[in-house]
View (cartoon, rainbow, N blue to C red):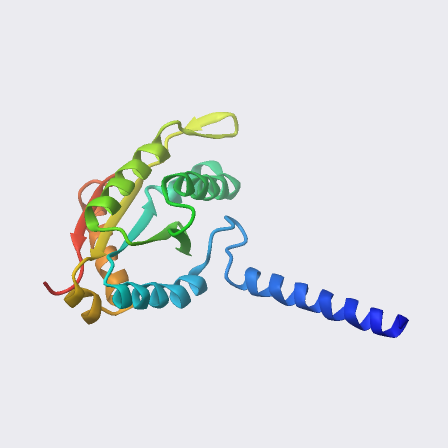
Length: 196
């Protein structure tokens, strides 16, 4: 009996360890947001679900403005704090049960919003832009004003949902993001993805 108990306990511990390893493999260790691996695995699933049920799907690409200057001027610990605070504030703007956020690299994040049209995603993007700026992030006991540029895109029609690949959806959001950057930063640019 004792041997059976030990085996059962070891199997349970192994299952817990495997579950934790899977979670860590799709989590950004600094911000605790999902990472790029998660994004590339689950965005196609979200798109497939949107196609199946003919529901809109929106994506926001976010880039923290002047992030390199924060690192250069205040140090990498300050930059880390900005990234962590971005995730905290972005999480306050999205629906906990369906929307999700992934750090796609450096100071760039992607927010995926199932069952959200362009207008709704644009509203969330503007809210996020405002909430990141006010109140300023406190670093080394000093308030630091941080802004974000955001590109918003959505698939709304059955045709666009069925004719757009996940990478095309990301590319459309990224193009909108670059328009925000070129327009002076601290901007939101929204454009439908797809071919309609």
